[in-house]
Length: 272
Image (cartoon, rainbow, N blue to C red; front, side):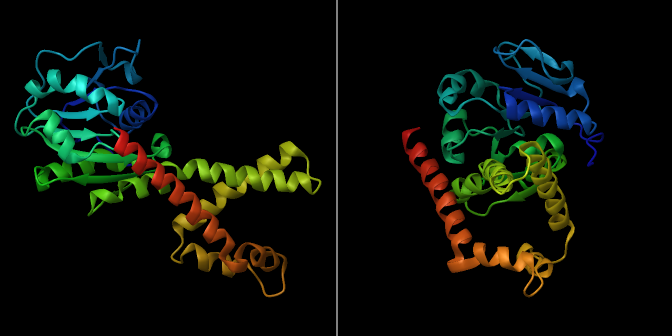
């Protein structure tokens, strides 16, 4: 667990739904002091860790605050006129608003604060997530490092060189848990079709995915090599892999899946 005990910046969370709430819970587990946190969300009756909860923005923000935007993208227009006068030089705005570019955020919020876009996924609640980041030229090296420090306890944190990769990253890491859940369910259902008890098949499938993922995360070899290492010539695993590998059918299926998700993101961006 990466500690946030030395993290000394105040964090103002505007919007605290499922994802932002999971992130905050994880940060508090990792040592972020609850007195550093202010949550602004009229839709909540309490906040993780009993953090200060406000129904509207305060009159002032701390000078060195990190402001996390966890609202719906369509809420930016209504928020900007209230938030932008509160932002000062040296503040960092971290945005989870899907499809809203750094340029659009900067135009809406003004030039005072540096803007960093992020795309986390649901396993951040366990510290096993993936969080992609991108910042425009307004963000200094120190502000980038600050964002990295705050997000590292959530899992794998990597910066993108090109902002236009966000929809593909979202398709892979944001939508990916759902795809993996579906694959896990398909394994269980296939075992049921061949005669295994439903509940037992599901338990086995979930356990094997968890264990195999842990092995892959700790291995020096890539997953393709791990699969081949498990598969002995003429054995059961090789026979099954031959079905998946024939004509690259699994790769083609996943390519179609990611393309569909990515393209839907591009379409939604044009609507926003």
